[in-house]
Length: 381
Image 1 (cartoon, rainbow, N blue to C red):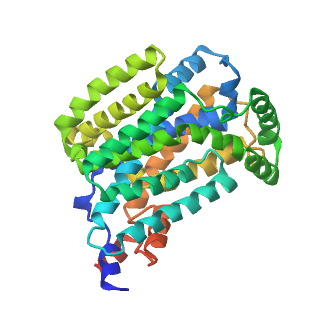
Image 2: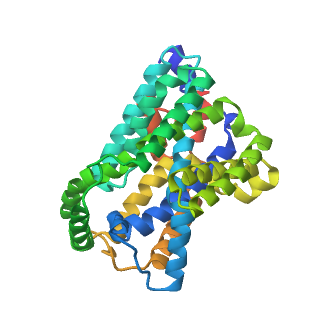
Image 3: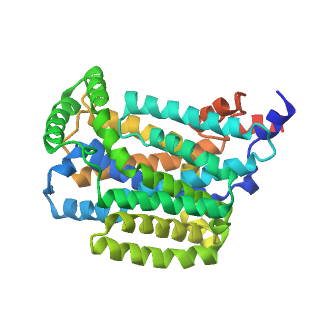
């Protein structure tokens, strides 16, 4: 191992970790889980485009409203903000390495490979592929000053809002194609074996890609916002965080109320993120929200694990509950899985430096096996 590789492959000291970011990532993962289990594993993701659904109970209706209005796209927007901040943190902490660009490119290539595997073999609702591609767009700008990051964020978010207002013709699938896909999903996901589900999953990818195309510009824009938040020191400035949180949440909610959903979603995500980060910086906030930090440190592992678990629960090669459960029942299953992951993550990180997939990602990024056990890491240091 070269001296340069040795230096950059050391673990980030605990004192250097920003626990509030881990907390926010862990909480955002709950929102992602809730939306995925209710709207994408329980039924076809395309069902929502066929018109209003009629939940069978008032509780189902209330939960669906909360998920749609307060959580659905906001949780994914939060994840994009966090990934952008994480990419900027990695970039800055590798400043002493002459191989910084190559390492970060390899990091994104490895993430892209993970994403394609997840997309094709596990679940086609994958967001890792989109994030890797967005990372390739953002990475060159991390060499630029903060004003250029801010300008890039404004440009990409403005392009996103323009595309929502004036959707390109032919980008979104026809209603007939959506209807046929939902009918096939109700049959294959519910009763098909693994190979049947795999074949249908691959066949759905072009339709899924059209959904990503509608939000890709937003993802890139939020990556820039996350990177700018890190570079400007906002992430650790509680006064600024709370100054952002309340107006962003209030204005975002108002815009959603009058039907300006794309901009309202972005503002709500910013407000949520700023509020949670601000609270998590205080001692009482740490005690209140600290349970989410281990989950956030292992978000990659937990995200993919959720796909594996929910696939087995809902698809025909497992319990085959696709289309058979209501919203409340499905969310209860999701919460149970999430709670188990909270406990598992805390236990795992008492003995290990990283989650299993985080360790593999880092090892492939550096091309050097990283110490996994805490005791092993101390011996290396």
